[in-house]
Each structure stands twice: as structure tokens, then as C-alpha cells.
Amino acid sequence: MSPYGVDKNQGGDSPDNVSWMERCVESVMKKNSKLSKGSAIAICKTQLKRTKDKDAEISFDKDILERHTLMKAQFISKQMREGKTFEQAYAKFDAVLAQVDFDLNNLY
Image 1 (tube, rainbow, N blue to C red):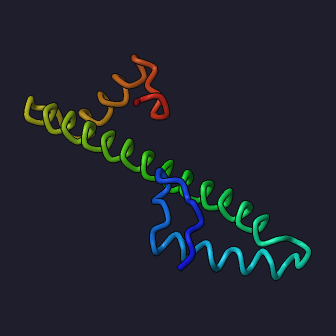
Image 2: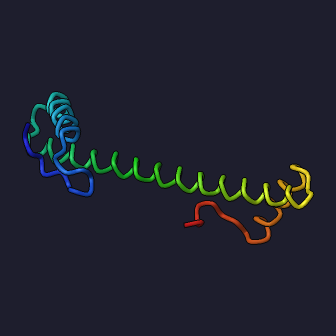
Image 3: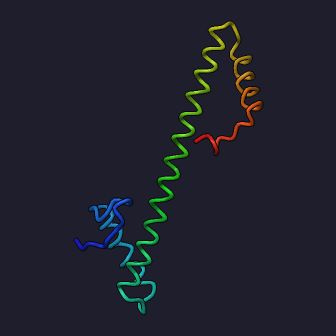
């Protein structure tokens, strides 16, 4: 197991990251035999960062969607307790969002 100096924010030189880096470096060097191992490591560290950043974005987007869904369910439930039908409550939720110019991407 070789340390690759993976950023701690990306999990550092964890066993999973080291294994990923070893496979990546081997693959990069097979595709371009003129590259030094150091260059292959740099390429792989960049790719690992992109992969980790994308995973973090997906996780963040999923969290926002879950919060939005919970908020919607709570709103509709409250409206139905007040005597509205599901369809009326759903329509009112959409109307409220339209009034505040709701944009899921700018929620947090």
C-alpha cells in the first residue's frame, strides 16, 4: 500500500482511495507508456477529486430533494387536517411555491 497524498477532504490515503489510485495509475500508464508514474499519479488525483466532488454534489442534491419532499408532505398533511382534499392541498402547495418564486437549486 503506497501513500499517494490524497487530500484529507477526499478521504486521505484510505484503503479504498489507495486501491482506486493503484488501479487508475496502472490504467493511465498502460494507455500512455511515455508518462512518468508521477504524472500518472497527478492525473489520477485530479480524477479522484472530480469523482469525490461529484459524489458530494449528488449527496447534497439528494438531501435538498428529501427536505423538499418532507416539507411538501407536512404542508399537504396540515391542509388536509384543515378540511382540504389532497388535490386542493397539493394545488395550494404549488401556488404558494409560485408566489415565492421557488427555486429548488437556491433553497440552501
